[in-house]
Every structure is written in C-alpha cells, then in structure tokens.
Image: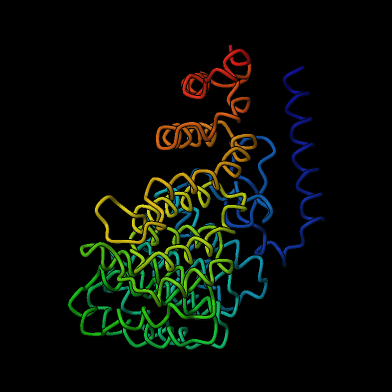
Length: 424
C-alpha cells in the first residue's frame, strides 16, 4: 500500500509542476530560454551552490566546459549581428575568452569572431583583438583575412580604437604583415592623441624584433630621437625604453648635452616609472666640466624629496657617478680650489642622509633591507656621516631576522666613544 501511495503522490506532483511551468513560461517564449551552462544561462548541473550566471560574476565564465558548448557558442556568434542586447553580446564574448584562457581550443570560432569585429562597442573590440592576437601565430592564413579591418580601424575617429587596432596589428608577429604595418605605424607617430603615439612607439620595437632589415630601411631611429621632445611625458618614456633596447649592443641610446638637459628639465612631468628611466641615463653621461656636473645635480635635487625609494636610490647613484666624473684627482691640472672626488662624494652623502633616514623609518621590511644595504656601503665610502643617526638602526622586536643582522652590523660601524655607551 505504501508503494502504491508513493507512486500516486509522485505522479500528482509531476503533473502539477508541469502545469505551473506551462503557465509561467508561454510556448512562444520557450525558444529564448537560457541554455543551462551556456552564456547567460543557469549554472550547469553539478555546479557548486551559489554559482550564478549573471554578468556581474566573472568567475562563472571559468567553469569546466561540457561537450558541445563550443558548437553552442558558434551558433550564438552566428546570431551576433542580430542580437540587440549589448550585455548579452559581451557575455558571449567573455565566454569565448574564458575558454581560450582555460586552454580550450576555440580556434574553430575564428571566422565567427572576425565577423564580430565590426562593432562600435570598445569592450567587444578589445576581446576580439585579444582572440586574434592569441591565434594569429598558429593560424596565420586566418589572421591575414582581418588585416584590412585592422588597418581600417587604425584610421578610426576614436583614438582608443586607433591605438588598440595598431597594437593588435603590431602584435600579430607575422613576417608577411610588415608591409601592412609600416604605413599605419608611421602615421601613428604623428597622431594628435598621446595614446596612439606611445602605442606606435612600442610598435616600432615589435617591428625591430620581427625584421631588423626593414626596420633599418625605415629610419625609425631618427624619428624616435625627434620624439624625445614630444609634449607628452609617457611618449618620451616609451622612446627612451625603445631606443635603449634597439641600441643595446652599443650600450644604449646615444646621449649629448642637449638631450640630457632637456630630459632633466622635464623630469617633474614624468611618472615614477618615467623618472627612473631618465635617471638610469645619468650615470652613462659624462659632464663636460664642473659647472655642467653641478647643474645636473641641481636639477636632480628635487627628486630626493619624493616618496619613491627607487627614485631616491637612482638619484644617489647619479650623484656619485657625477662626483666621480667631475671631481679633481691627483695629478690633474686644475685650480687648487677645485673639489676632489672624495670631497664631492662626502658632500653627496651628507645631502642624501636625511632622505635615506626618512625612507628607512617608513618603508616595508623588504624596502628597509635594501636601504640598509645601501647605507652600509655609504658608511664604508664616507665613515662618520651617519654616526649621529645611530638610533635609527636600533633593533626592534618586530624586525625580521635579516634586518636585525643588518642593523647590528651597521651599529658596529657607527660606534664611537660618544655614542658607544648608548648603543651598548
């Protein structure tokens, strides 16, 4: 009797559920129901509790794929042009990129993805460009199919689209693409928007690594030197990096007084990364005389007041290199009043003591350890200058072991008859 009753209840519940389902979802809308596990649909069976398919949860795109879902995406991409919901379009693209990121081969969707490149949505364009660059090397014939579209986008009225298209065109890394890349690249260097210009500068470097012979024929080196006077500091930073890499065999970009002083006069315009790029050039430049060396030091002095430890350390290195270059050495035919190398280095260490001590008191443990190593070398270079700052190097209970060792080593070098009782 219990068995019969159980089957009767189950049969009644099944028919009741079907009735409610049909009442809730009319027949003419069942074709638009989301596919479980598909883009924009419900989570697949077996998914962890709380998994959601909404656009706000990107982790839902990175789930295990089921058999046939790539074909499912192909069908969705074929209706991409007629889809009016912008968010649903983005969700379809996100699913394709997620599969690609997980290592699933979605190169079968190459044709459908290229048809989706004709859109005004910048987010979708970014994802299509990413897909293209990822599979261009393994599918060069397919990549060449969309060359005309990328070249066309390089002339788009939106500077973001122009920059993205140029970056994607240069990132294809196919030798046969050089002839299509050169002209858009040359136009980008004279573009009115800084983003396009700095993207073009990095594209020059990609072209150099792809084909050095064609690069030399295009005379891009001279163009890059001219662009060091670009009004945008990020473009200048990229020019410095590209010139240093292109001319690495000869020691980096060529420097002269005009270039060096121009960059140092504009150093306050650069980002922290750009400041470091400029400061790395100073030790390679030898001032013509004492006055020029002191002029460079005066231009670099404001950098010591920044909170960036890397910039401060690079400035110290630049100061010491200038002192070594312009200081008087034994046997030099200079005036007796000219400072010697040791005198200049002593003055430099006195000047940089306060910024270093400030950074030591406010940095992380990793930064503190690096700065302690610099201080250790400066004490050996100019003994006695840090003696009055011995309290900064007291060991604290929360210091890590390697920092404690460094501080104890420095305290031993700072000890003198005046401060030894306090240190002990």
